[in-house]
Length: 324
Image (cartoon, rainbow, N blue to C red; front, side, top):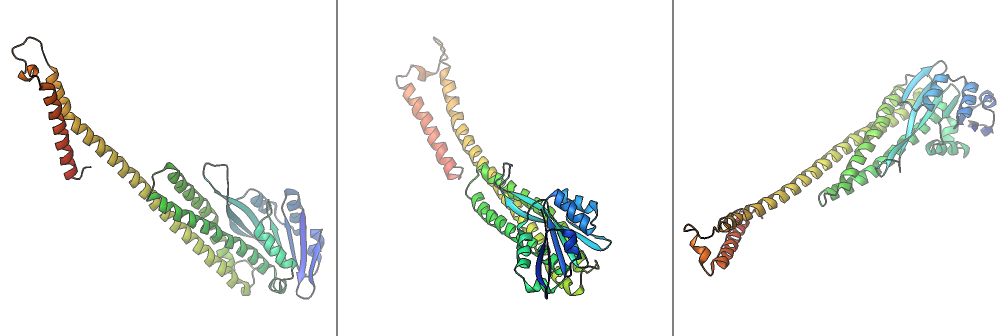
């Protein structure tokens, strides 16, 4: 479905079903589409290059490109959603193509994006800031709302990291390691969204495209600063998850060492007992070389008491040496 509005400070907001008619109407035109058929209709009405539309449909990396008469900016909305992977959540990317013309702006996306809907609704309500400014400011608002959603995602990641940091100090459950790997995977996916988006918005912040008014550059610089902060937070959180994983592996290694130490103590205790039992087990019959204790009435109890005494003395020694 194709949607189009034409708005200005003096005329207000008017809706159109035909994107070509909306483009010819006086004022700032905004058209958007969410399906392949609607994208093709809008692209034809605003003379948008087919390769730019394919970039939106194929979900390529964020970028900014200049064409004759308009500037194409591809950004991605990102949110954490339940996925089909073994991890609890994964980053879902929704590409949004923003085309900035002289008196028009077009947004194309394979699905409806809540961030775009928010700005669209603001235009419908007659937001004075949007009505009084040109299409470059409308494009800024769309990109700004998308980038603001990045910090919601990072806040959820931060909460998960805090929980993991508490778990690694108390448990060596394999689920903890899976959660650590899941967060690292999410951060890597998000970095692939935020890093190129920073480069794309940087071109707009410098005012390279002629469609960006000098008065609007400062707004794009603000978005650029937000993206720099988002990338920095991503790197910080990756370091935190790396530290949490190292703590987890060290805890597992320490736990294994404790088990091995206990087993070593047990084996060491049984070693002399096995020796004693082995020696007294060589009771050859009718031999002058038999041990005299074999014919002693209390030989067996004495051997058992001796082995118990050896075990107790060794336990006391290991305890004193802090092996237990």
